[in-house]
Image 1 (cartoon, helix red, strand yellow):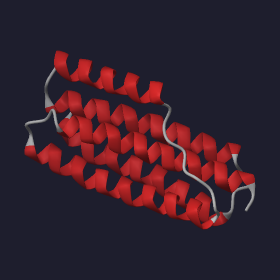
Image 2 (cartoon, helix red, strand yellow):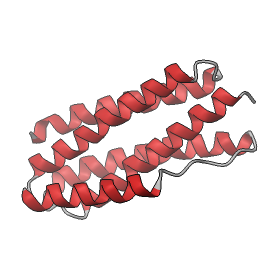
Image 3 (tube, one colour):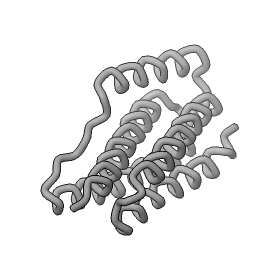
Image 4 (cartoon, one colour):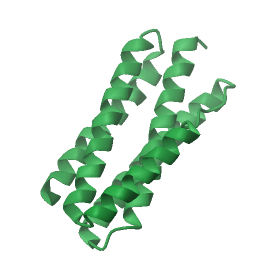
Length: 143
């Protein structure tokens, strides 16, 4: 399997892990059940796409990529601080939307950077970008 395919799948897998970590953290800080339901739904969809990335990597005999530890810690602290200063569904939706925008930029950049990736991997990456866009649309009602 070519290197672009592996690198794209690793970036997608790492991005899905970042997303699910953030969503699970925010859900634990929320009291709004309707927002929790939306986040849970999109968390499950991210888990499924992350599992697809993981399975493809396994098929190609490659390991997955975990998000850098420093990145995970900084994200956790930033989210905790933002939610502590304004503990509202609106703030939670804003945090999630910011994460979606970062995900869209990151995965889109990876699609361009690893242009030699196979069509299946590119399609999976595009699915993640679409999922992020759909999540933003679902969060808009909470602003």
